[in-house]
Image 1 (cartoon, rainbow, N blue to C red):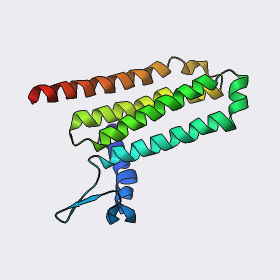
Image 2: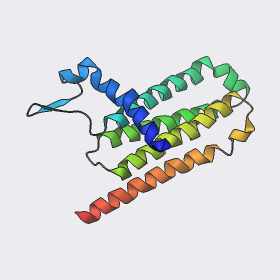
Image 3: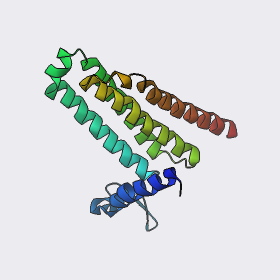
Image 4: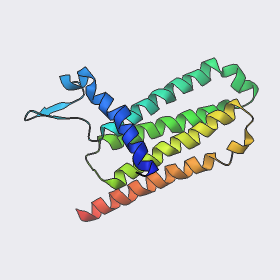
Length: 166
């Protein structure tokens, strides 16, 4: 099994199976019944990852604005922290929307992976840069931004192909 395959199994086991076991998901709050079949989100794993990502963006943004305010202002890195939280939140929203999309396939999953890795690398490196003097992380941040761009590019190709098909 490849490394990516291993992590896909781990993610499915830890996230998706746990979501399906939560009682209120089966009581019609987050699902729709269609001829005795229960249909969850189109991509429940993406929605779950997006929800966690958005939750952390809000929590880290608030923590930076209040709990770390003096520290970040003293080092003039409040803007760096805010940028990390902003990009994390916007990509969490994009991932949430992608998780609601009826389209399936490897390309959609690839977009989700690029955005998720982008958040981890881009926002993660900015959070660390804001709190430390690890200057070597500076060149790492654009790699996360590149992941964002690749994800958006793949999504654009999917949309153009879909439009040309119709």
